[in-house]
Amino acid sequence: KNEVEQSPQNLTAQEGEFITINCSYSVGISALHWLQQHPGGGIVSLFMLSSGKKKHGRLIATINIQEKHSSLHITASHPRDSAVYICAVRFGGTGNQFYFGTGTSLTVIP
Amino acid sequence: NAGVTQTPKFQVLKTGQSMTLQCAQDMNHNSMYWYRQDPGMGLRLIYYSASEGTTDKGEVPNGYNVSRLNKREFSLRLESAAPSQTSVYFCASSGHPNYGYTFGSGTRLTVV
Image 1 (tube, rainbow over the protein chains, first blue to last red):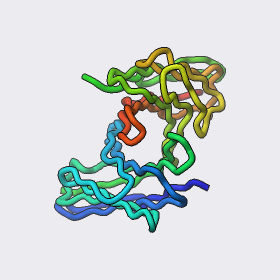
Image 2: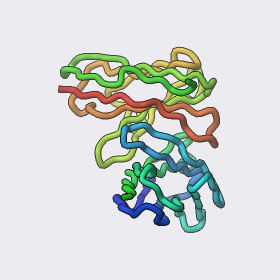
Image 3: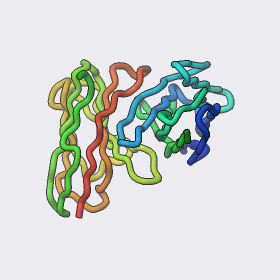
Image 4: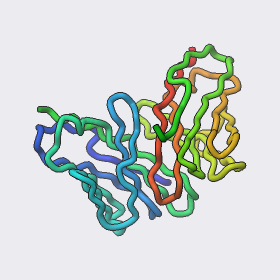
C-alpha cells in the first residue's frame, strides 16, 4: 500500500527556533514534493527532490532514499512561516500521480 | 499574473444539481490535475491530464467527469452533486514531471 506519513501533525515554535518536519513513505519513490499551504488556503510548491538536499533561503529539504524519509527544515523561524506543510510522493510505477500526506500545521509565535 | 486560475471560489449546490469547475493556466504546461482536499486527509487526485487530448482517472474519480478543452483549460464536472462531494477543490498544472506544481486558489464547494 502506498502511504505517506508526516510528523508531527501540529507544531508550535517560538520565533527564531530551528524547525524540522518529517515525512516517511512506504515504498520506493521517483520524486518527493514539499508544499506550503497558507492560512488562506493557497498552496505553493517549495521543493521537488529525488535525492540529496535542496536549499532555498531559510528552507532546507533533505531526502534519504534508503531510509524512505525526508525532512523539511526551517532555520530562524518567523511568524510568517506559520502554515501547513505538505509532503507528497510519486511512487515508482504509478505514472505521474502524487500521493499526499495530511500535512503538518506549524504555528510560530512572536 | 501568470498562474492557474480557478472559478468559482465558492459554490453551494443542492443535492442532484450539476456544475462545472473551470481551470485555466497560462504557463504552457502540459499536465493538469484536479484534487480534492478534505479535513484530516491529504489531497486526493480526482483526474489528471498528462497532455492536451488525454485524461486519466486518479484516486477518487467516481461522480466526476473532466474535459481538457485545449492546452490551457481543464474543467471538472459534477453531473449530480452529492453531500459527499462537499470539499475544497484544487486545480494544478505542471510543465514537467520533475518540476513542482502550480496550484489554483481553490474552490470551496458545499452540497446540501
